[in-house]
Image (cartoon, rainbow, N blue to C red; front, side, top):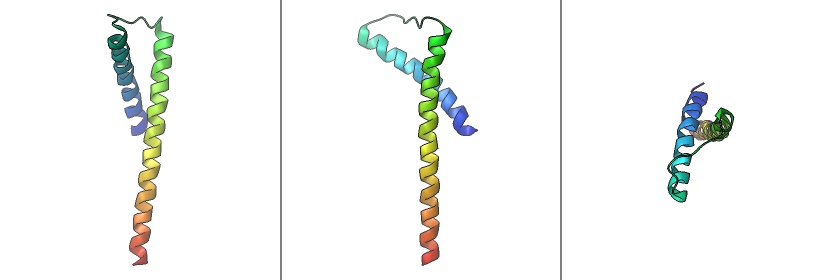
Length: 75
């Protein structure tokens, strides 16, 4: 649940960071997304990218803790 919340908020923030970068690189003063649908599509891509990254981090952390516990039992 926390991963989804953070990914949702982070995806929204990434949209604005990406927009700012494009505006600076192309010397634009504003960007027209062409409606709500393209904006939501960009947000959704960012959401799923962050969600996948957080999921991989969670799995890595759990495996690391499990390996740590195994080494403690072997001693």
